[in-house]
Image (cartoon, rainbow, N blue to C red; front, side):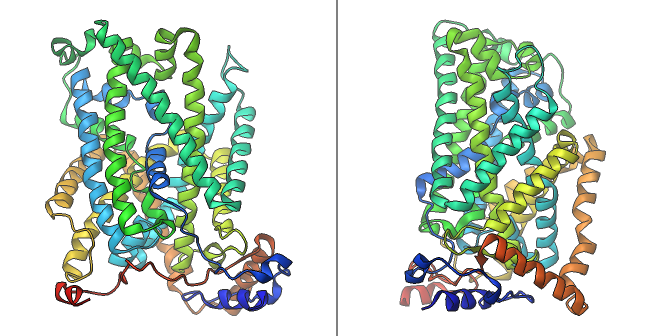
Amino acid sequence: MAVENQLENSSKSSPGHEQTATTQHLPNATASADSTTEKVTLKKEIGLVSACAIIIGNIIGSGIFISPKGVLEHSGSVGLALIIWVIGGGVSALGSLCYAELGVTIPKSGGDYSYVTEIFGGLAGFLLLWSAVLIMYPTSLAVIALTFSNYVLQPVFPECIPPYDATRVLSMVCLFLLTWVNSTSVRWATRIQDIFTAGKLLALGLIIVVGFMQIFKGNYEALKPSNAFNFWMTPTVGQLALAFLQGSFAFSGWNFLNYVTEELVEPRRNLPRAIFISIPLVTFVYTFTNIAYFTAMTPEELMSSNAVAVTFGEKLLGYFSWIMPVSVALSTFGGINGYLFTSSRLCFSGAREGHLPSLLAMIHFKYCTPVPALLVCCGATIIIMLVGDTYTLINYVSFINYLCYGVTIMGLIVLRFKKPKMFRPIKVNLIVPITYLIFWAFLLIFSFYSEPVVCGVGLIIILTGVPVFFLAVYWRNKPKCIDRFFESMTICGQKVCYVVYPQPSIPDDDLMPYDTEVTENSLKKQ
C-alpha cells in the first residue's frame, strides 16, 4: 500500500471528529516508509517492569527526600505520624484495587477521564479533563521541574538560593529534552523511567539501611514507644484529617499506569500485577524511610529542615553526603519524564473522544508517539512556570486530584448497577470501594472545614469548564468560518508535527470488547 493511501486511510478512520485533515496537505513521506507494513498506531512496548517503574516513579517524587513533614506537623507525635503513613498506603491500595478493576474492564488509555466519561457521560469527563490539562498536570510538572533545577544549581550557588532566571531556564531545558525523547521513542522514554526509578529506590534503600544501622547502634530515642507517642500537641479531628490528606497526597500517582493501558503488553494481566507489586513496595519504602529519618533527627529538626534527606546525609553519610542532593535531582528528572509520558496520553484520549482539538489525537507517522499532545503538555507547563504562582496553585491541585479519585471510584459502584453482566476479569468486593469512599468523604468534609478557600477555588477551577464544554463540545452547528479555522490549524499542525490519526489496532487475543455484557454461561461456552 502506498504511503499516501496509508495516511489518507488513517486520517479518515477517526470517528467522532468533525474536522478531519486530509493527507494531501502533508509533506511526502520518506522513501523508507514506503516499504513499511506496520500499522500507524500506539505500540505496546510497556512490559511489567516498565509498568511498575511508571507507578513507582510517579508516586515517589521529590517529596519524600525534601519535606515529608506535613504528616508530622498535623499528627502531633512520631508514632501517630508513622501509623498515618501506613494507613495512607493502605487507602491507596484500596483505591488501586478499584482502578485495577476499572482498568481491565474498560481497557482504554486515559485513566480517570476515560472511566468517568464512560460511566457518567461527556460533561463529567470533560470537567475532569479540563482541570487536569489546565491546572493539575502542568502545575505538578512545573513544581517537579523547578525542584530539579534548584538541586542541580545548588552546588553552583552554595551560599544563596539559585537565581530565578537560572532555575527557569534549566527547568525548560529539562522539559524540552524529555519532550523530545518522548516524541521520538516510547522505548527510550520507558527505559529512562526504569533507570531513574531504580536510582531513586537505591537512594531510599541507602537511607533505610543507614537507619537500621543506627537502630542497631541504639540511636532510636524518638522511636521508643514512650517517646513516639509523647504528643507535643493534641491533634484535633481537623488536624488528623489534614495529616491523612498529606499522607494520601504523598501516594498520588498510583493511578498513572491506567493512562497508558493501550500501550501495555497484555494489559489485563500486567496492569493489576504492576499495581499489586508497586503499592505495597512504595508503602514499605515510605514507612521505613521515615523511621530512618527519626534515627538521625529529632521531630523538631525534621520539621525545621527544608530538605530532610540532605540533612540526613550531612549527619550520617559524611563524605558521601553529596549522594542525597544528587538523588533528589535524579528522582525529579525521572518524575518529569513519567508525568510527561502519562499526561500526554490523557490529552490524546480527550482529543480522541472529541473533547480536545482533533490534532491532539494524532501520532507521529514514523515514531508512533503523540507528538502534539506532548508539545501541549510541555507548553502548558512552561506557561504555568513563567506566569503562574506555582506553589500556590499546587494547593488547589491537591484538592482537585483527590476529588477526581473519589468520583472515579464512585463510578465503579455505579457501573456495577448499570451493567451488572459486563465482562470483568477482576471484580473486587464492593466493601473495597465503599471503604475507600467513606475515608475519602471524611477527608473531603474536613478539608472543606479546615481549608475552605483552597477547596472553594479548586471547585471554581473545575466549574469553569462547564461553559467551555457547551461552547466547544456540545454546540455542534458552529459557523463554517470556525470549522474552517480549526481545520486549517489542524492541517498546519499535521505539516509541522508530521502526524496522522492512528489506525485501529488488532486487540489482544485475551481481551474481550469492554462495552459488551457477557454472562458466565457464555464465557463457559467460549
